[in-house]
Image (cartoon, rainbow over all chains, first blue to last red; front, side):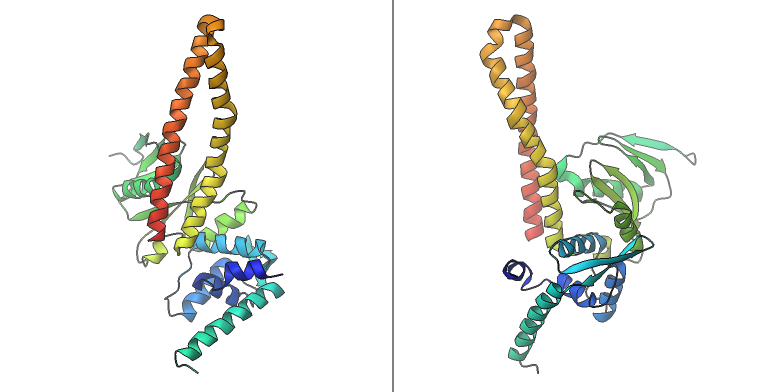
Length: 103
Length: 186
């Protein structure tokens, strides 16, 4: 059922990964960028065109869903399908990490 | 140099020229002309202090949540300053920004996606008009014009003219889009 999604999203871009990862909590676009910046010491910066496009695409693909609106900001959260895809990607990254000598 | 001196330019930016248009508006603001209003084939400026302000164009097809979209860009510090033919114009001061924050796209894939949206929703209708009206009409006038005398000849010339314009535009756009694609894929 998720074959198409797996093909499209795995391996995942850093942008998509952090967006999905952050959306395990309800958040809006700008707050995701802020959080990702903090998590990566400012290394990963997601700008609005990319953020808007990614959120729209992920919503269309059913990885995230719109929860509610707050002062014209749309809040999203990850769906079950999104969790599944994120889980596959995390397993892949862990395997990578193990194979390069991490734990 | 009065406070509200104004300037209008008539630069033509076609479909694949959205980056060039942003660069042009940026350059103008850098020398003290702030964009006041943008139209299809004209740009209206008002005099300002020269400032390093960056302009970028975005294109979202069938945008169903426009206020939220503008709000998101505003959260990041981008001011909406125009909309022409589905292209949205944004600007922000470059002071103290990292190079990444000076762009509205932070990865090449989203730049390619924007280009695809432009091609699919702007370029395709032009192709349909070309194949469904210009080509058939050109053909009909070409085979029938001798029977209609002067008016037939005028019609034929009009469609030959349109045909040439379209072909020139298509060639220009296709080359422009290929250049952009190669740049994004680097």
